[in-house]
Length: 345
Image 1: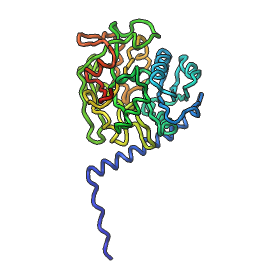
Image 2 (image 1 turned 60 degrees about the horizontal axis):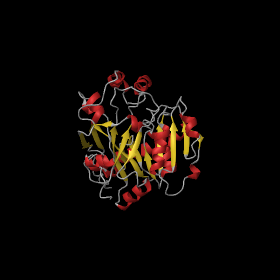
Image 3 (image 1 turned 180 degrees about the horizontal axis):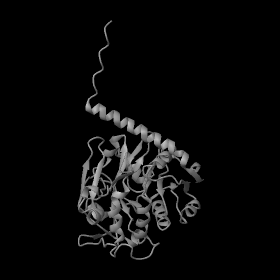
């Protein structure tokens, strides 16, 4: 009896594609399984209509930002917010539960072990996001894009669909005050308190295995990671996505699977339509918050490795420098190449 010929070995490309497929399945399974730790506080998702643009967010103790976060994205045209509260001890959960366009879940499970909340949001995206344009952001991020004051998100999404873009890429742009960190009182409109930003330099590279973009540079690297720039924060995100079943965020909202989605943006300088996430991390409460987060150890894969970072924030440095620019609208950011209108005029 003649033996069947052995199957040819997988090529490196096929082997990598197989690993990526299995990784996506694992991420989807983690998201599905995480539904058990989410307790619904108020579920208004039955009010979501076809074509609505949705926001998905995980947060903790963000009452100082929440009124501005909701108002900003409502003005952009968001119809419904799906929010996971991770053990807040402030007035945030009650405030959110009273909002007619918010559905709220709570969990006390580990933020870090849930892939920094992405397992929880993965389930909500799986359950409620399919077929919608979904904006996945943190409470300290405010999305803007070319002509955002006059063209709402549905118009932006229609433009993306017209050009065949499955997602909108965005630079997370750190905003900071002129004064030393921790100065002043909150709450106040974050965009009134935080006016400075670094126009550059920003550098971009792609990982070979999945095409994930990694953009680094900017203010936090300049001040906190000057000696170890490779450990600086990743600043690119794919926050706005036309969600399909089988999509999964792989590294927060920095990268996605299937990997072709990662090609939606090449970083600063890309001429395709893109946006900016105004990052309002450095509100006056940042010092106290950093002390708490250092103790909780929930925000990095190896929290102890970032003790020096937290210590540097506690020293209340001034981020404003000679290179700092004052934020002056979307046209300025387009002129700097930090986002682009892609011919959408």
